Amino acid sequence: MSHRIVIVGGGAGGLELATRLGRTLGKRGKARVTLVDANLTHIWKPLLHEVAAGSLNSSADELNYVAQAKWNHFEFQMGRMAGLDRANKCIRLEATRDEFGVELVPSRALNYDTLVIAVGSTTNDFGTPGAAEHCIFLDTREQAERFHRQLLSRYMKAHAGETGPSGISMAIVGAGATGVELAAELLHAAKELAAYGLDGIKPEDVKITLIEAGPKVLPALPERISQPVHQTLLDLGVKVLTGAAVSEVTADGLHTKQGEFVPASLKVWAAGIKAPAFLHEIDGLETNRINQLVVHPTLQSTRDENIFAFGDCAACPQPDSDRNVPPRAQAAHQQASMLARSIRNRLEGKPLPTYRYKDYGSLISLSTFSAVGNLMGNLTGNVMLEGWLARMFYISLYRMHQIALYGMPRTLLMMLGDKLSRSTEPRLKLH
Image (cartoon, rainbow, N blue to C red; front, side):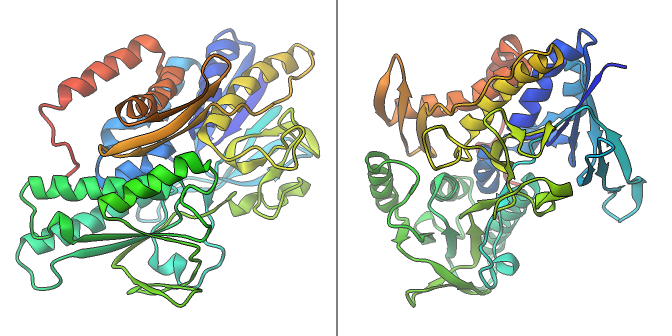
C-alpha cells in the first residue's frame, strides 16, 4: 500500500502543498495524497477584505477543490476535523450536513501515515464583552459576504427613500493589514456605489473609524511604512484611534478603556489571531496559549514525528530569536514549499530540512488610492515602494499564488480573462 499523506486545511498553504505533492508523489504513484477541508471551494484569505467591500466577486475567483484534485493527482475529502487518534494513526471528521441540518455524510475516520495540519487561524476577540455578538469577523468567505450584504442593504434602503440617517458609520477594530486595507476598500466602495446611482448615502457621509490598541497602525511593520499609511488614511477621511483598547461592544458602537464611545452601525473585529479551539492539546500534542501546535524547525510536532503543522496554526521557533515565525501568507508559502521537499525526503529515508523564515518585505494596498511597502532580498536590498509600482507588486502576490496552483499558462489566460471582463461587468459586486 502506498504511503498515505493527509493534509487538513485547504487554505493557501495546505492547498499549495497538496498540489505540489499531487504533481510529484501522487502522479507517480509513490503516495496517496488526500486534502481535507470543510468547504468545497477555496479563496485566498488575504482577499477577504475585498470580498467584504464588494471589490472582489468571490464566485468568480474561487477555486474548486474537487476539480483541483482531479487536475493535480490528489484526492479531496469534504469534512471538518474533530479529533485525532495518534495510536491508530487516524483523524476523525465530523458529519457533513446541509443547510437544513440533514446529514449528508456521516462522521468517519481517515487513516494516515503522515499527517499535515494547516487549518489556519481565526480572529481573537480576547473575550471582549459583546464582540462575538455585535462584530463581524473576516475569517471565512461566508463572513465576508455577510458583511457585504449588510452594507448593500443599508444602501438599498437609503436609495429607496426610507427615512432614517443619511449616512453610515463603521468601526474596524485592529489596524493591522486587514483592518487598514478594509478601511480603504470601504471608501472605494462608497465612491463606486454612488457612481452607480446608489446615492442615498453620499461618499462624504460614510464615516469609518479604525481602532488600534497599539501605538501605531500596522504595529508589526516598520515606522517608515506605518507612518505614510496612517497619513493617507487621514487624508482619505478615516478617523484613526491608536492606543485605544476596546473594552465593550454594543449594538450601537464600541467603548474603549480610555472612556471614548465610537458609534457604529457596522462593526468589524480584525485584531489578533488564534488557532482553532479543537487543536488545544489534541490527543496530547503540545500547544501554546492561542492553541497553536508547537513544532520543531522541521515543522514536525514536538510529540509526534508523523504529524506536521505549518502556517498560522503552528508555533515554529525562529533561529537566534525568542519569537515564532509570524502568521503571514509568505511564511505559509515558504513552509509549503519546504514541506513538499521534506515529505519526499521522508519517504526516501533522507534527513529533513529545517525552516528558516525569510522576510521578503511587506506591501499594503489602500485600494485604488495608493499602496505602500518595502521589498527585501539579496538582489534588491531593502527598497521602499509607494504608489502605482507598489500596487503592481501587491497584485503580483496573488498572481504568484495562482501560478503555484494553476501553473503559468493557465494563470496568464486567467489574467487575460480578468482584463476582458472589466468592460462587461460592474467594478463592484452589487448583489
